[in-house]
Length: 196
Image 1 (cartoon, rainbow, N blue to C red):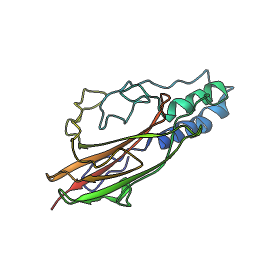
Image 2 (cartoon, helix red, strand yellow):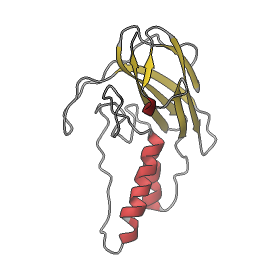
Image 3 (cartoon, rainbow, N blue to C red):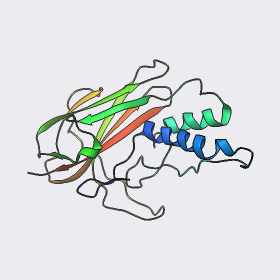
């Protein structure tokens, strides 16, 4: 994956990951069904590995991501009865994770997520800011999850989130989670760097 100027890896959002699952299946497995015994998805579990959402297809709280919908579709030939929210865009001050976002300590900023639900379910939001992980393992080694920093967001969680940048300089990550109330969630994050 690409990295920011300060070497933070950029994670695909949950919808982009689901799209990749489907595309790879349709290109590399489906055309060769006469030569392929089957396929599987390795369930890595839910744990911190660069981020708490990088490899898992379920959130720590148990919600399914859109990748589970895609697997249901591939293996059953139809989509599940209730689908996961789709993440359409995620911006921090109008910038994406690929834009090397720098913020000033203690200054107010705003993030926006656009998400749709295929079933029209009401959506709920959760926002977090964590320091960038410094406990980096290899090949599935245990990594500790950074603690979310409390008290940075203003108002009730919604699709737009005004927040105060952390007071200390350094690398951080802004996370958003979008829930449908039916056991499904979308997620995304943007790494950013706080400096004077």
